[in-house]
Image (cartoon, rainbow, N blue to C red):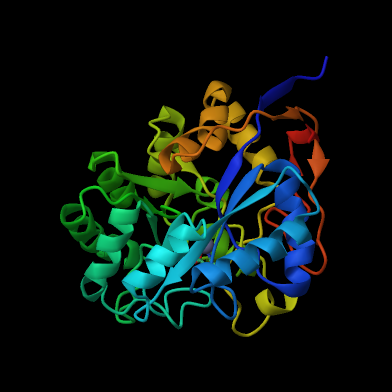
Length: 339
Ligand code: NCD
Ligand code: ZN
């Protein structure tokens, strides 16, 4: 008999849906497996205000072609964000403000240059109950990509000390130092974990070959860092929950002289997480990681629908509409069978 598992339908707390043709191609793939997804605001023309977010939500809903699916909205916090923008965005249903240190990743040209100068914004987010979502890498170009996350930790500490009731998510955690720091901090602080940071190390990006489809920010680190991230997830503390950081770029933008950062993982994340928990003999922790901890942190009701997976092999397609997915052409041992 084939082994199957049915879990509460999950949420993905970090997704790049993009716009136009890419949005139409990728949104259904997330909506097939997830009930809700937190939509990142780093579109070409960023989502800066509540009005922008409402429009973008409608575009994502339409593109998802699935009535069950609910996009959760963010705005981008920049040097130009005002307290009034935060108040209005909250009224429009925006649940998080995403802060990218200027220039650290795709479409972060317009970002935060000095976190301390934005104290009134974080204070207003704390007052209205909007989550601060952080891309935790410093933008100093003299600091290597391997150190940018660790060097951001003092800023995280400053935020936690200065805004004690502000909820903060340290996105796509990639180092053991950041895992330790988040674990020790109060329950107002949590971290998202991606599938690729559970699976990859730096060598999978630039070991024997340059593998552009594994290139992302923050760059996957050492096997030791990966082990600490894996342990945090397997221990099931509630402070570490799922956010895929699925970040599609068309093949041409990845396989070229200056390839963009971002891994497109939406179609494979749920199955690969089942495989991860199975391989580590902790299948009982899978559901909380994908379907409970994130919703509880954000204060959202748990989904009531279910999704089923079975232990049956499939080969991941080479491309989805000119976008190469994570683990393309590789075999996965688990498969989503009932959406
Ligand atoms: C993301 C993207 O492409 O938008 N890229 C990435 O490497 N993760 C942006 C981000 O989350 O850093
Ligand atoms: Zn991201």
